Image (cartoon, rainbow over all chains, first blue to last red; front, side):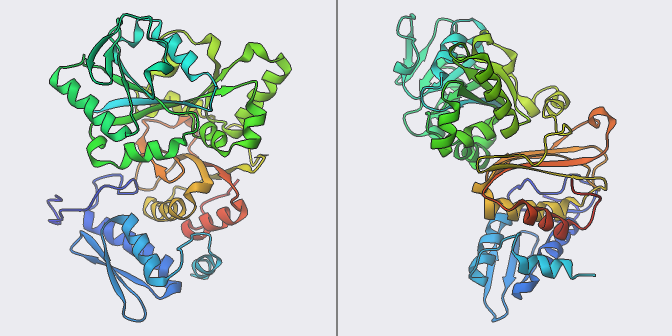
Length: 99
Length: 329
């Protein structure tokens, strides 16, 4: 558990923060912000639930909960009913158009 | 205590058994456990063996030898439990021989993801035995061959004495082009207990040496062999680990079976030390911190070996996710 944030945390993933300098909640919010930039073209938003899960919300009001990054991608694909491909021109165009 | 598992793979008839027999001939495997498919595979019948449990025998040198019987996870857990109970000697490493048709990626996935195995074992080295005589034919006909060669940390060429030197050189060059970071040796030169096979690679005492051996900064670039392609990305500015994690985890999830191998030495904003990553298909190992930059060169490099993947789009995707952080070679 993180003493500063009181987070029990989720299963370890290779992409977890490298150091312990920053509070875990802040690192988690940075990750969520990065993911939101990627899924924005599909009108999907991700938010944190108690530092342990992710809440995914689609444009039509569909929702899903996910624990861990693997499940997050899986649920996101289920909500938008297509694979989330980082080589997809739709995602790349949106990211490249950002100032 | 977590024990290293070295995986010995290679296509059918490539000479894995010959290699194991050679290793078993010495005393140096006394602190190892050997997991094989069938006892008949390894010529241990002539040795005076002692059966300690069903499917598990103790060789005279002290090496524990047991059969996998189809379920690798259970075999590994049973073996660990027997070690804990003192039924078998306290071995320090496991050597696992795969079947000739095995793709190493699911084995790595089992080791990396299974919660029970994770604390007990970790992956040491992945050694692939390549038949020098049949290499060209096997590459053309069997997709498993490419998976085994690209996943390897060490490539051992067998039957080198049965091909002309020119052919051997050609096979060695081809293997180097397909997997530039794996060190190569001839099976005939391997002696029992060779450090080449018993090391732990990145998890060992000298990860810097292992990374230096990857030759990430050598001139092998964007080469193409059959449907496999090597793609190198190099950049000067430090990268954002969070954005990189999002990008690579998405990429491996979506295109894992097309990314045969990924290796990289990264300059990350969050860490003053270099970070090493490596993975096979969908599985990525936990990142390793190095103490210093090899050759004092502070530059990030990522090498992908891909099959049927558009590398132009891969580069574009990297830039879009991580921003323009210097040149992408």
